[in-house]
Image: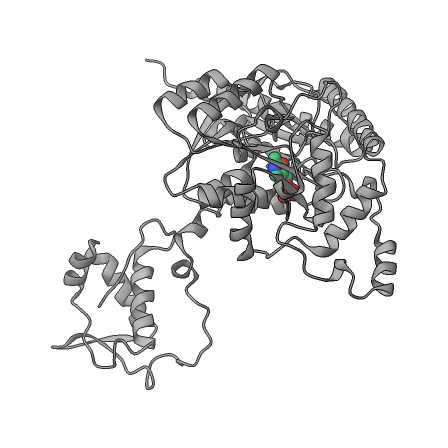
Length: 502
Ligand code: PMP
């Protein structure tokens, strides 16, 4: 009788044993009348306590699958006669079913936190998108006309794996404006830049390869790297972005395969990598033959700085995979972004993608191509930035007005987040619990680090909430931070009073 135990599962061991025996009885691998091994023998075979096997057998007895018979030990009961109805519809045993990779997706914090920051119920600073009321109207009327006059129009049919050639040509031209050398064949339209991260990871990373990320970093990037079996190493950031001196130390000891970075207003800290560091990073990648994923999701949102060159503009060797999205500046529901990379990378990603989503959504591509071709994008983006800049200023003022001592942050020069450090004695998850009771949400910092370091940070998005919500919500967060900080202090004093003095 073969039983496989997984000590990492949350399911108790005795249930794992019982479930597997039950399955073998139902599938007739174990037939009525057959004896099960004595408890002690099975316990030794499985390397568990005898009481664990005893518990498993007891639960099977209670369910009518086995019984103890004098002189014969424990035997399988005829399920037709006395066991439960074998035609009973039962769910699969999920915990046994899923492969090991899926466990990497089980980010409890995200699973538990995301529904809580759902904007329907709360003032949410937890998202990373524009307010839908401020998003542009997409050209659905034009699309309807196109479809009515031409039912075979390209919005309704298959596209090449990398997207419409016409859209790729437009995107290549816009990328060249950033001094990134690019032709349409180097562009792949992707289903959001998330897919770009994932595809790049899938073609480059083998289990055990090292991926370097900034600390803090974007949590869904981490998810892709983990799923590919990567060993992830963090490099700290400061006001000038990734600490390249620290990266160099790491490179001396390890040989990473890939570096994931957000040089422009990174998520969550909104810091921008300095020009010197950008140049050095590209040099290092070339010297050590490491691929860089440059995730430029927030590159449009400059409020003060001059635009710095992208890493892809500093590289002529093909070591940079450059990613952009339409989620932040047009609409997240389009699920459209693009990757710019060496043709070899694009070709290889295309091979992998065929088995994934085949090609980007045709309707979304049609809408984006129409929008880009009929909009003065420079002035459109200037308007978006102006709106965001005002909200950033408002959030900044409100935090300054209400923040208790020990709560610190740097006013970001771009992006859509303010990254706050809480007083040392306040924990972000506890704070979220408290603010949710008052219908205000944010993203706790834990998600963005591999370690526990994030417990004292919160990420506050200012592009989604409206001005009145920023005023109200920031006041609530600051008040709750103050309460927690003070109650912790009084708890500490109280506890110290209880400590016996020797
Ligand atoms: N990268 C970063 C840094 C992000 O913040 C996000 C979205 N929050 C993404 C990638 C994914 O964006 P998309 O909607 O284009 O998949």
